[in-house]
Length: 148
Image 1 (cartoon, one colour):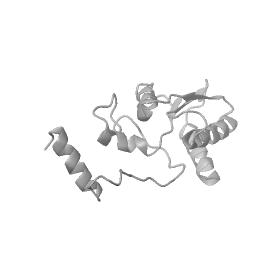
Image 2: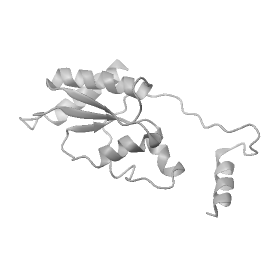
Image 3: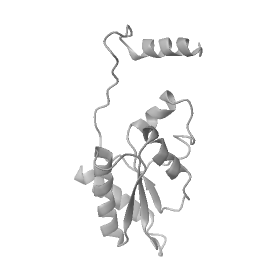
Image 4: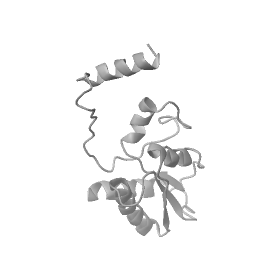
């Protein structure tokens, strides 16, 4: 974990070394989850190290809610100037498939920088649901919604 954080910080710092006046103001780190969780913990480790290396404050902006779409939307609508960083989790890549609409494009509106952490991701259903594989569950849900 520490290597990932340090690698990320070095990547961000070297990406902006060509701009002699960067950073000239605090950096905003948008966290789409509430304080205290795993995403928040990783974000605070990264932000603290980033602040130390750059000599500028990193402002932690927790935008929890709506299955992380509130934070993602704020990041997608921010100026692409290097002063806003968005840290996300696997739900970012899942949301387009489970939510009817998003106020942003989960792929086109973001540029990945680094993978900071990994963890297991499970998809579970009630034991009474007859689907034993995701594909069958997906087809069943699509039929019920009228999509097929």
